[in-house]
Length: 140
Ligand SMILES: [Zn+2]
Ligand SMILES: [Zn+2]
Image (tube, rainbow, N blue to C red; front, top):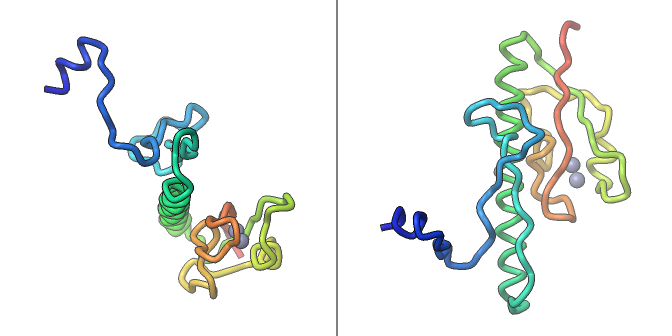
């Protein structure tokens, strides 16, 4: 019956929580690319502190899932190109945690997960999600 509501311009009720991921207009138009969507920040208006806290947990778990999917995508294409290592890249702003700052610029193996996780997949960054990425190293 959703089509009737669409025709009549009625909004489908989503049942709270955080809005679904939106397409990122800056992303390359590749089907199923994990980088092609943007996780939406949860709305805070009209929510109890408990709901806001739960939304934030959900928001960060979506960001972590996206970071992991992006890392897996990059690792798969880097391996195809013969890469065995990557260089850790952190955002160079004040929100980068000490561990990510320390790893920035260092070389890691695609195969060996460093303590705390690969870039973009870390779960113990204080902000709740890691914004780092792996830059493939080609050749030797
Ligand atoms: Zn971090
Ligand atoms: Zn990080």
